[in-house]
Image 1 (tube, rainbow, N blue to C red):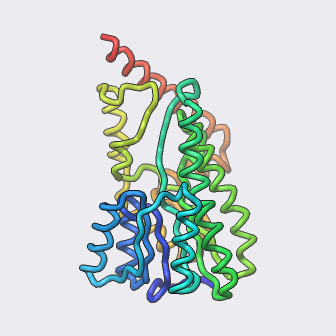
Image 2: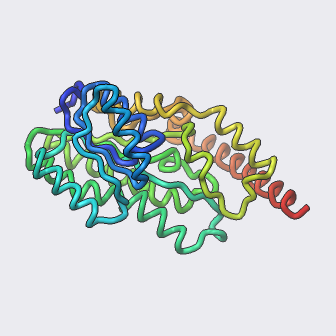
Image 3: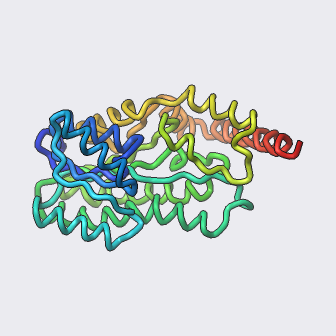
Length: 288
């Protein structure tokens, strides 16, 4: 059954301390959701919970934890289910980003990205969705993937491994959960103006170089706000929409990929060439 509004709905948001997670938690609170929040950043999470409550929203429980830790996620889920029963909406938003050419990615980089961006959402699904099914009242699962879960973006091998994986899980659950009245939304953001833009790891590149700074400025110019992304997510829930785009460029890119694959390949090759040029310029600057 579709969730037409969030009023009174029990809603989990991971990654709630900042960025899209914070904006989504605040937006859901304004719509009357009963919130359960988590993030690895304890002080940031406490500030968001206080902000929501000061505005009249309801935070039933917030807890700092790492979704990479299955035991911590399971304990959090058990505490919620014992006190409040199954949730109505589960939103997997938490994640990290590490970019780099494959020769610069260490095993630890691959492992970290996959553990947090893929296994983390799996832990949340494993611990919360069976109770939602057993509750028999339907619900909704939101998995935030990325444009890198749709496209072969340069330097995104590790990141895309996780985001394409989450896309695959969502594609299966979209049909598996339908018989239980549980909708699934796969959110594919492009550029979003979050703190992740400033802290992103780009391996083998001097991020302080003018070439990288210019590329970053272009990225930020195209970026939407976290609030716009949050509005798209909540709209996707209300409309029981599977693919949720937060900006028109990703929607158009997906259309090109499906309908005009030769043009998609051309665009990806040009983007790859451009990023190689940016990397080369940054290295020349570092060597001078």
